[in-house]
Length: 242
Image 1 (tube, helix red, strand yellow):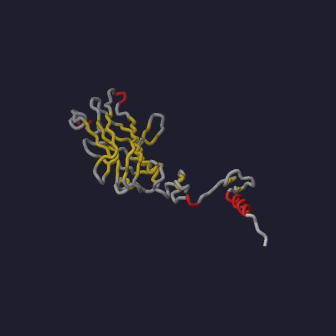
Image 2 (cartoon, helix red, strand yellow):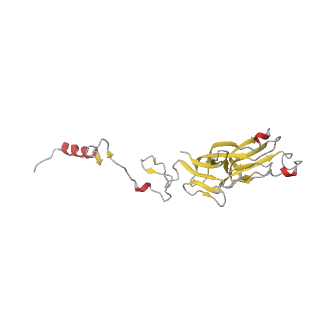
Image 3 (cartoon, helix red, strand yellow):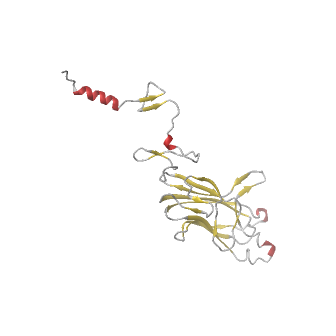
């Protein structure tokens, strides 16, 4: 019986372990070398979304469509009509149209956002205020993300929307932005809301009753101008942070 040197087996298995596989090429330069496009069926989704692909610690490739831990944009919504900011009262910002809702976490009917997983998120608010024609008194606004489960703010900003000092800029639009990083709980529901505060003389005790409604500010849905261009004025978004 012929004896085979053990070094022979070591050499064979070593060459297999470090073999380079070529697809579309006979001269691969890496462990897997593909000439052409690649498709991973496990990364497909039912929403026809183009999603970023992330590698987990063990090298598994995932997207937000099948793994709630994946960072990136979760939800982007907008208001379809101007929102009237009435006096001294909480006003729900109902985002009745969606640009994006990867995991169906936002309920348009209730205006509630419930994250699929507890974690750290980025809250983004971009909005225009306009139609406020008061020339003497500013509006104070408190705006942000509200936790309806615990009845408290989780992200908020206070700002003063300036009175229009000249009639040439009467009722103009002004843009505002806000970004914050917060912890959101998957067992809680959240929503965007705003609380405007007017000087009583500016709206409700105005000596000219005809101005009682036109002096109230609006959160603008659409921005139009003399050039004929039209653009979305107000969007709210939530992103998952890695």
